[in-house]
Length: 373
Image (cartoon, rainbow, N blue to C red; front, top):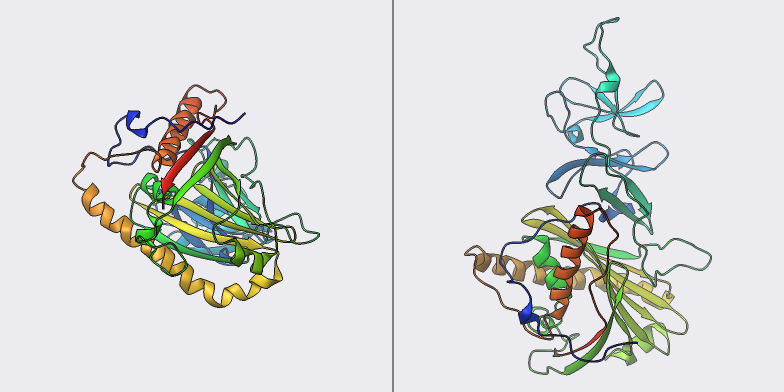
């Protein structure tokens, strides 16, 4: 049964500091959309401070290897695909060493003379678990090279499927880089109070017309959910999607926010996925799924609008970075900052559970939050 009492004041939490916390390991991250991973091309990437080369094998299956040749440390992404005895490999540009895309094992060293006593099986570059699911490429960033996922990437509670399909199909996406630690990017993603000030637009409530809102939240797998409710601008949704509009927003670690809009006829899912590149840089993708033909025309104007929205976030993160560079103490208030508090609790619990080799226990409790936005 839901506890409708307001959440405890966020100010009672441990000190909120300017520096970001630990980047979460042993988790799935969105690397890119499936359409971004072009066949026949090596993609140079960086995730959680680790250089990664990604691509597709001959059968189209995605792969990811550590982007460093173990011989002389030249990035493998500077090389090329080579068929080696019927096996697809990546050839290093420096000395031609070849590594299998399937598992990272060394398949060929050109400079070796026949019968020289050298075991190629001793040489291997790190191979990351990669899955193509719901038209996204997911990469598992383990705490060690031997770490293996204990399950598939997350699937959202209200994933949108076309009729007869079992996988979601990305209808539209846009990306941007945020010059900040992932913690600050996620906090910005969750923050309900910044929208009228950062995202000034006729489509959003302005800072001059703030309205008090009351939202009900409950814990969910690896995060929390704003429970179904009727949106403020339901007439617009009724026109686009049909009657009986309901909105539900789900957040889950490490940095995924899924906003679901459903009606009696159609569905829409807007997914915001944050993936850390380094300690001070991350990327965000706004990914959209829908099954309503009436939304197909959205592509005509969605890109400039979405890019503007992301650019506004990027600018505010850059401005915040100027202040964070002085390592000032930060503040948090009820109830608008409670989602940030929950995110920090979830992170602490995940890190603690991994260290103690036990199951994750969601620390979030059901609550009703009130704030003006």
